[in-house]
Image 1 (cartoon, rainbow, N blue to C red):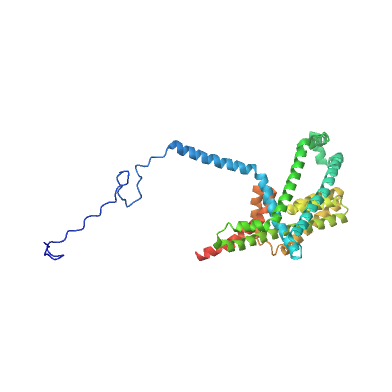
Image 2: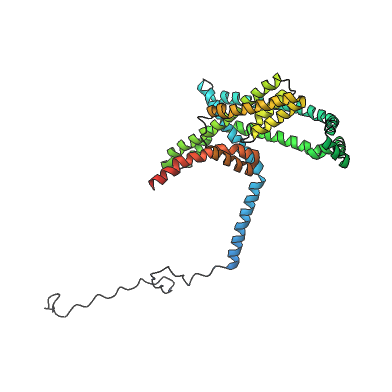
Length: 385
């Protein structure tokens, strides 16, 4: 018989039963109560084994140490790779210039590379014979230089007390000077072979980088997400253009310095003018102190010719450096590298302290690349923040 009481009438309805907890896991372990704070540790999870933890940590330290040792061992080769890459970037504008004048890419690379090889060969032909000949002449003229020094009263008095000049002559004439200077015949041979190997390595890598410059750039850009690839391509091309402009501009400035020095020394009849001009051109590549080093070497040889010739060399280099710093360099570097002087000095000092002369050479284009990233990426983000 049906219940006559209508729904909702009579006694108050009972409250809904409390929601039951979710069923226990299959293994029958009780569920942990919920906590308002950080989650508690599950007591079923075992504590980590201290021996395993220590082994994993020691393995990580050992791996890091082996990686550092591998980088240190391959440091010289990595440096050659970096130098070759910068040379390829610097020579790439010449390749593009030839391609714009109806040269095919292989022919343009061949012409530029042959020019580089001729420069290397010319440097060796110009420097090696004069250095060898001058070393022998210097050893023969040392007694005459000693007699000139003995004419000075102060030096003569010191020589009578300590026999300094006589010891210098005996030391140089005995052959110990050359042995210690070059580490013996074997050490000198190792230095020569190492220099030739490094030069050939740089040439081969530079040729490879020149031929695959476009492929390497595109491969690098493809590592960036598609949404940022176009922006990265613009920044990368700008950085490569700045670095190439700096390297090419610096080579042109050094070439002008070498040619000017050669013609000036030829006018004064200074011996080995070609070798001295090559030294001036190479040292002029070094930021801050390179031009001073080349000027000192050339002026010293000028003083050996005669005092007026030496004074003329000093005056020439002082005047030329002013012209180079305020006329030649600004016009050549106008569209290549826009780096403040303070950044140039600091970058060259830091690069020289880290990697020597090579670091000082690479510091300025790297500083230019860093400034491009700061101006195009960091500053716009700060303005939007």
